[in-house]
Image (tube, rainbow, N blue to C red; front, side, top):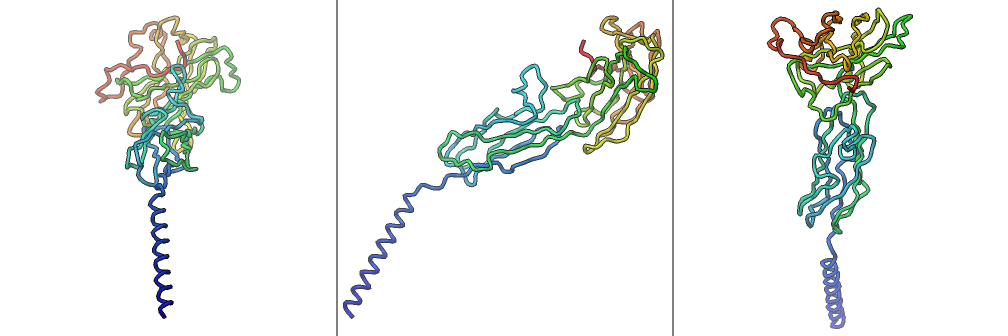
Length: 329
């Protein structure tokens, strides 16, 4: 019995020592590194959504302040990459190509400002990928990038077409499309305005996004810039884009003669307003018929940038301001 009890005591002592050794080893092990990833792998937005936030996350608080470097790829163009000569689709409004997570925090933010423009486009892609961090205490996971799909926003296409009727082959005709705003300036809220196509090809067009355009009245000039066709028929079409789908076109037909020809950059006579429409709430509406300018109105630019609107409009004495044209002069 005595021998048995001695063995039991020795066994208990041995187990206690082993337990202490294991406990000591665990205390010496460094804690697991926080794991870094994007909070989602994909996101779909619209051009008109303005500023959006992209989140990077840790699975637990950071041990120290650290910086995350990232890179941008995709079909959409950012402001810095575009430089001063190209149009761009978005801008990084937080620190460019890097963001920070502070000690004990677990979230980093990349801010992106999306821009509307005057073009109808296919879906564009922004891809953000984690490049590196300046800390050895962070583990970058496989969820190290996010793909952002930028979809076309709601708005309206305005198209000017000529030489499209039966027997009409206007090979020498050039027209230009102008957009004017009544009594307002800077109504786009845009910094990268893309003009419509220009030249002898029909149609000329631009896209008017809903969100950046102020509520108010707008006018169009359909300028007969060059040609010898008389009469010369043309059509202005308004096509609304809602949820990525086109609605039936609203067409307005007009006819010019040679008296309407106006190479405005040579004559210094402003293109004349020939039709108007309104933006009411989020809708474009009240499309007028086309009223060709008379010979007299073409010979003087005294009232070329004003128009009398419907009775009761308290801004009727304010001029229309040119917004965008189909030709660079």
